[in-house]
Image (cartoon, rainbow over all chains, first blue to last red; front, side, top):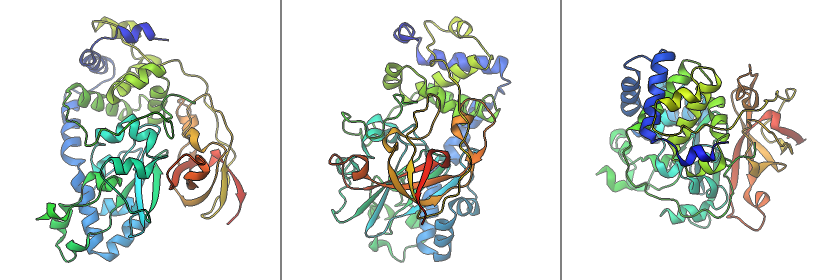
Length: 202
Length: 204
């Protein structure tokens, strides 16, 4: 319909500002909504939430069992919430032989309240197209070379449950307190696209 | 719909830009907030939002940054819901305000079925003109149910603004070598598949 329109499209800043104006005038958008929402998203929906869940799972076997059985309840137990359309949090456990990796091929869904806003590379068309079909190759290109014996499980977020990966605890960190463990857990590891670096906890 | 958004398994793409180069665009958080507001205030639902993105002209979709796709979907739905017209939007900017293509009819869910973990299932050979959350790479393929989700609104109905029944999904495990024989890395591919998209082949 709009090939002429696309080539002559107004700058994105202007189009975004126009939508804000329209929603203010006709959609009852409160004056402070954009500021408040952005602040809330940036301060509350952060990677540290998921990292704390992972660290707790590593140190508390009962919590780990609850988290694997019902990720939503485990997240709520730690005070973390979900938007209405995130109906369920499913936690995928990595083991010595099994590695899980998450994608959303149809858009870019993530458990953003738990692991933080999706990084740009996750929204990249190249990642969405390729990781389902060339998982080992894509991860290797990203610097994460899994042993040939590791079974790779790819999870495509096509519905409104959200996945997070529970990485395996590095042997070097056994016995560490939760707060120190949480520091080594990255967003990329909870997507399954990177390993963990114990030196980050030092 | 078999749109440009349905990227899983498409070939010809290159290396993932990893780690992501830094960028800071003030319009992006604004679009994120406006999109969240429109959903929170029930101007439209999440499936309508996704479908509006899918309806973008393929060339526009593939070249637009992530949040331009969101911006285009918000604008398209505000026009379709009668909140504003495209002319009004264009009167507020210097240039055009491209929208997504027109919406067609949605479809109803299939009669409820009962699935259990371990069931062998096949994804129906459906070609859906409207919103659907079945990626093309599993169409007609067989796999095994490994998990069953809580019920959620059936997207093919909800995406068209109609009252949608709640339906669970099955996480179905496929072998990558069944999906793309001789042309993939070995892995298990799991997809959250709405039960209406599935037929049972063998009970566990």
